[in-house]
Image (cartoon, rainbow, N blue to C red; front, side, top):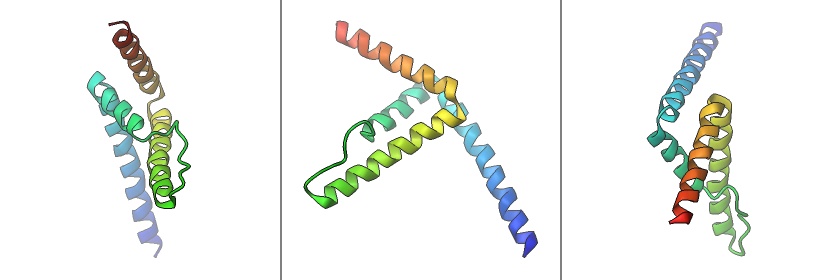
Length: 99
């Protein structure tokens, strides 16, 4: 039983290391940061999930939760690239607004 526990723990540690590496790779490129920003924007995590329809509210809350989770994960795994993504996103909005 102890061997199974150790094996699962080693697999989780390996998977966590792999996930961190994957997110670092994705966020290392401007296109990857745009993908991450799009996923966060689609989640509407900055908006209220309250709705008169309980099913719609549950759906909105699920989307919002995903955005919060993704944001927290990016901040934890690659904070500097997360900040860079926000700056790029803000610069894109400014240049689009000026046109």
